[in-house]
Image (cartoon, rainbow, N blue to C red; front, side, top):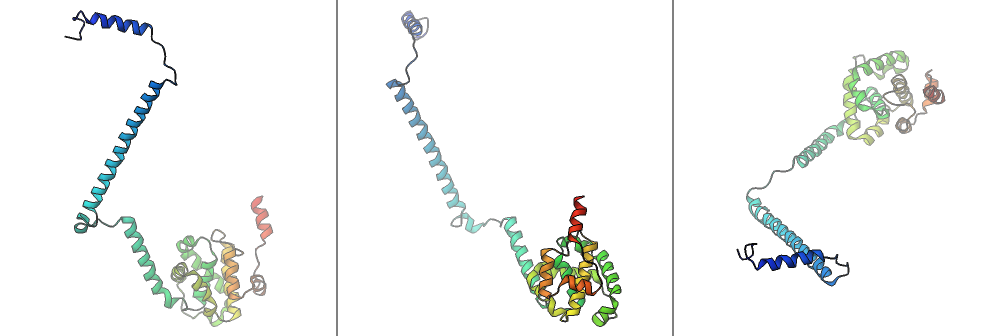
Length: 252
């Protein structure tokens, strides 16, 4: 009641308020009191912000202490993240698989060498594995074409080319350098190497989505084997791809 309009003394306050309102003027920006007000406001803001950070840090330290390795975490350790566990399993599986294929890197003969040459020169190994049946049929037809050159390289028993391709793909994927460098030991004679290179190149020429017989990877395999692809193809009567015509045809 003391500060309400019922109190007659408050009429004086009301008149003063009206007078102040009528004569109110904006304060200049360099006013000392205004500057002090802003400074006090900033100090309060910084103090509250610092308090909030300190409180949050204290809570974090408390939680780490209580639930960390020196507290409840020692009794109830957290589960290993799924990503970390998956990576560890994958690493262990790859290591185990590499140990398993070590004896196979230098094992085999002409079929294994031919498969590695083809795998080592293609850029789409996934397609090669998915189409292993179709590719196996093509290899059989090429081997018939070169039956005279093959001679005793391949026994009388039929070869499961899809299985050979899958097995050699695994070896090349796990140990690419060793697998390619071991090919010369699988086919020690130069004529065998030339024949294998030409057959693999014919496959790539007829299945261009698999790779390029003149790619860097293919030339790397030819170099390891010490085979001049063009000379070998000419010797065996196989046409080599004309790179200029191919590019021109694609551009057209």
